[in-house]
Image (cartoon, rainbow, N blue to C red; front, side):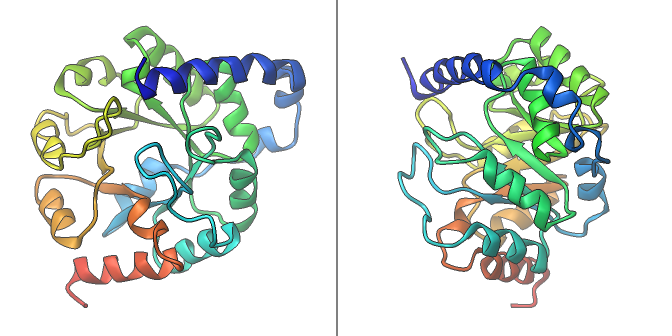
Length: 263
């Protein structure tokens, strides 16, 4: 069993337990659930340099990234230094994420918030809205086309934007549907966690212009981002580059200035 399969198996067990603790009726009737959301896709399209900055403590490929910088400093630093949106990892077993990080982020910023997790059940979509997310991530490798259609339609009904992450051209066909807002090309192979930036270039050529297009993972310098912008990318999701520093927001500012040629 590879890492991705392990994550999904554990996630399904977690959801079974969650449903016993907080039922859907409780979620839907909460004040949080009825709040107005902020469109992630629209914000990306409006930005000159659109970066979704990620709150990420660790990953299976990097056992420890940053457990020292307080979440409040990370989130406010991202907003102050030009983030288009903020991505919050909520998967706890492999990424040390927390729902509390998302709840805190919602209190601290009006930027669009992407919930980064492994969504395999409708319950998580309602839960994402309840926790404060404006957009959800669907990972094509974990889902079949019918599930992507079902989950994305349900998300749109809750006024959540949908980012679908793909890793190959074979996955592109099953995500080109009208309820998907953003297609993200992940440069990291989720089965062995190797990284190849050329993945974004090869796949990006095939993505229809009707979708917002972003590149994810393994992005570490401004030259790579400039190259991807030339290939039609609208934005980027970046976590480790920022989070490995004690001041992630400052590192974000440096990257944006480098892309603009101001540093």
